[in-house]
Image (spheres, rainbow, N blue to C red):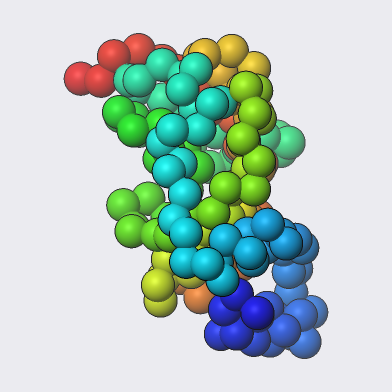
Length: 153
């Protein structure tokens, strides 16, 4: 088991009837975890296509009035888009898939949670992000759209 504490937390949320993210850790991520390898997420093919600069990240799939305001990030390291709910937290990454237009990782942030992110590149300035996991002791699951808006100020 990758992290017994995280799985225990998932079981607790399931017992309370809360939505539990499915498929947080894949078999390949578990294999990487057992060997202790940390992935070079910043070197992923899909991320290398993206432009550095100011990005707006918005929720997808809900009406505009129900959405939170867009989050704005100055992104110089594109791997930041892969761990949006653990921004600024040091985490260990495991690459699940690495293609020209799609990338998937799982990650663990010692004592701060864990997650899985699937990113699909539409253009170098537009990506779709599916992310789920645990942050601050609570589960999260989001469908996001990230759009390049210009240079960092």
